[in-house]
Image: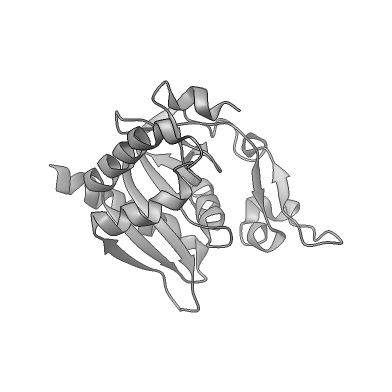
Amino acid sequence: GLSPHLRRRGFFFAHAFAAAQDERAALLVGEVGAGKTTTGLALLCAGWRLLSNDSPLLRADGRVYAYPGLLSAYPDSLARFPPLQRLAAVPAERRKTLFAAESVWPGVWQDSAPLAAIFFPRIENRAQHALERLLAPEALRRLLPHAVEQWDREMIPAHLALLTRLATSVPAYRLRLGPDTDSLAREIGRALAQAESDER
């Protein structure tokens, strides 16, 4: 119910996981089951700060703003991370476990950070992770289904303009996921550092 009011004040939701390191935000965008939550948990376990598990707020100033809420993950994802294994008891039905991020990582939340890169993770049957740079039109095409709410026709032009600005101003990558969660934060951190270097 808040989303129409927020859009009219310049804040636009995206269906994504957002985390920050050294005042640089990474946006993880993808459909259910693509691996964005597992990737996000890997970042938090590596000391990154949390902006949002599912609904970060984007704004024309290029920053990602926090939107509070619980984290949720399937037991097999939780079992990959030592700090979360106690939450990974398998229920009678396979369903996600909800938990407060601050119960695992005190002080983990951050209010906002400038967007440094966008990642589109996808779990694949491969030995190692791979990052592939995307052109801005392809990044925008992948962002649209996870952001624009078509029923709010009045705000579609402003939302589309914002997404176009973000897709053309920060690098975007296809993140092809292998099984090693320990190296994910390093891979994404290197991409963010490279993006910062390119800006200079």
